[in-house]
Amino acid sequence: MIKINVDKQSEVSTKNWLKSLMMTKPQRKKALQKIAQANIRKSRANRFRQKDPDGQVWKKRKRQPSRQMQASLGRFIGVTQNNGHTATISWRNRRSAQVAYIHHHGVRLKGNRAQAINALNAEKTESIKTEQGDTVQGCTKHQALKLRRLGFSIWSARLNPKAPKGKRTKPNATWIYQHVSMQEASVALRHLKGNEGKSTWDIPMPKRPFVEVNHKVSQKATMKHVFGQQ
Image 1 (cartoon, rainbow, N blue to C red):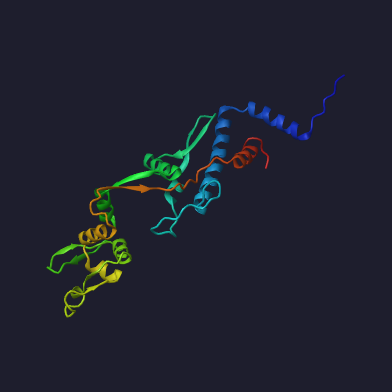
Image 2 (image 1 turned 60 degrees about the vertical axis):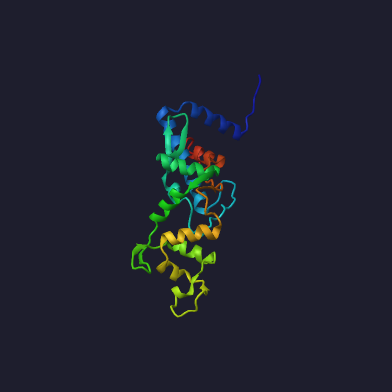
């Protein structure tokens, strides 16, 4: 007579394997849904911490560095496919998926002058009066701050009519926002940055991934929702 001794862990693993083989398709779909949702929660936690799946902090952006990045992408991620054998984590909205791809892989985008103008027009601005009395669209606050940092200067007479002729002054950002038109600001920025002739330019996008399928998270969800073990 041959006697085979099996340790407790192997016995449990074998029973779990046999149990998984006997699962119906609805049971498998339900289990996959729970496992996928557990990984979505883990991915959202990565985004909230502004870290990639390896725990590395994302590169800060130049504008609004303290603002949370990819907030909407974190909300809209979900289970987009589940056939009982595999489940897919993605975005139901095609545009969101395209943006997520850019952030996840880090790509070099092409920008052009028309896109820049549309972006400026979308920002909140105020109407201002020119020295000739015409009402025009004022520059944006971002343009005003950028001009100030780059050392934008004007003839002092624009600030004080009694100022000596030929003297120039660097106004503060508030004055620029209230008195400089969007067109003047755009021309001045191109001149100060030395790219008057550029009609297209590269926009490097650093990698900022947050979506992952974590082995430990998946294993824990499987033990809980498939085998009923905590």
